[in-house]
Length: 84
Image (cartoon, rainbow, N blue to C red; front, top):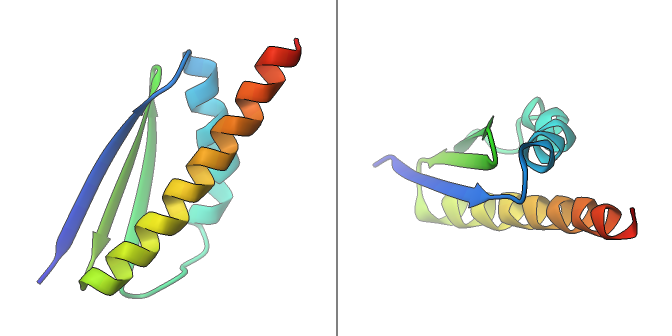
């Protein structure tokens, strides 16, 4: 059974979405697990995360990892915006 998750994040502006995408892009090149695949797209102010997995355990692990990475990236860029 293939599981699929699609999550859309709305950011303050398109540069934030693009910065998060560019920050996480190198992580996409490294295959963490053969049991799941990840795709991230920046589309204007939106960032889309798509995860496909063979089982619920790898889906949970992939979601936890990528949601945490996106959250941390957003917080870093948001803090830079507040400073400037």
